[in-house]
Image (cartoon, rainbow, N blue to C red; front, side, top):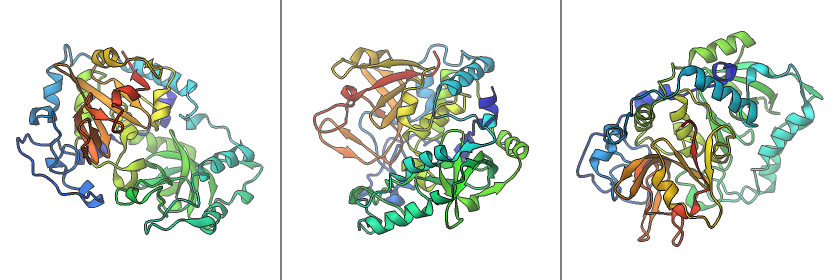
Length: 401
């Protein structure tokens, strides 16, 4: 329970600004190419990208009631607060990427903190390109590395408590410079130095500061990375924990109807790699849907897929997944490499999912740049021209039965 109360930092309050799209039978076609301005288009007319209608998805499917009505006993609360707290406690104890800040020791080994910082800073590579398409180069990467200030790390690090006072990015290195693998990633901001985000009221531990004094290397409940010092206020432990608790909304009852209603509050919200630019990404989306019902899970897809306390069906490379997909229940999570989708239900032989996605490819070769939380069929989605999503499924995960 301590993990849930002291470390679980929900952001579901941000859903208040996301409106469920009104039913519409005709949506205007948006022109490509898509940029960040398209991604931030009004949510009210969106299933993913503004004005883009997804084949196989009717206007009725853009309402949570459509899916809830198809579920037997959808409103039944299947797990009480005590059961979820017990699950969270076990998940926290057995997961290496969730952190009960309240249990942190008074000092940490400097060598261990240095290892955490170095592991992240390896993301900054000279071959990455900046927003102008130019390689970062050795000199720029060296400056980033120098700003991590590793030489100033003491042998014993004393974590300092702080509270987050404004939403801020978590970065691999102490810089706001954006870096990309290829030019196609620039318009949609797939920034390889962007890790995640923190939200107002969250408690974090400051483990180190940058050479320029503008960045802090922090430990949040689900991530370690650099964030702007200006978004933090140093406070004592009790105040940090009290403020963290104050921003946690009361969890909804754990029912399939509540899972679906929560997911649809995000419908049309912009996709953003690593929560950049005030957005969310696929793993952030599903983790916050489940967080609204009180369930704690890690930040990234691979870590979510491997949570030891969840019910997980794993697949070998050659195993057929058809029957498992057909048997998936609403709320189940389908993981393919680098992406996660939440099952909504089945219509005939088709399984439908809701997911936060840059876009999807269809069996006929079309690519739809959705850039947002979208309802799509599953079986027609393609990982590439020859490989359907279904062949790429690594696991189907059910956090609670």
